[in-house]
Length: 162
Image (tube, rainbow, N blue to C red):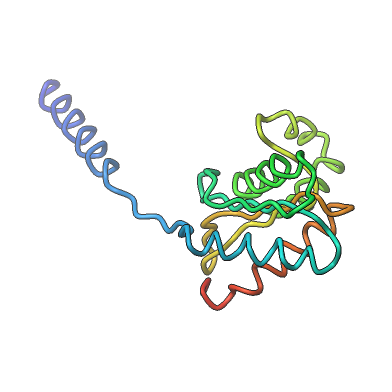
């Protein structure tokens, strides 16, 4: 009787593992949409007099598109990538992450995570309610201005994200 119970538990455990080993389907940002977003972002910022770099990453934080404006500083490419990565990782605007770090002692070490940049200018890209990537802007004179450029770029493609 004891061995039958043991065999039953072993079989149930194996079936449970099999049920968990399935293929997951996830939405992700396309290269063409990523290229469109960085192009709009850089052009919108340039129209306001800001020489920036824009980066779009996919849901896993991998770079899908980068565009650097003429005369943008060399630091802007890495700053935009890190802001996009931070936003994709946290599924939140980097300005919200910054506010959380400033207010919550438990979050004070988030900026120490490799590739995190806790400054305004990164926004998640959502398809419905699902985060499929993020955009980061670096180079405007303030994170709030980087975020405005990112927001305008996302608004320009909102019809494709529903």
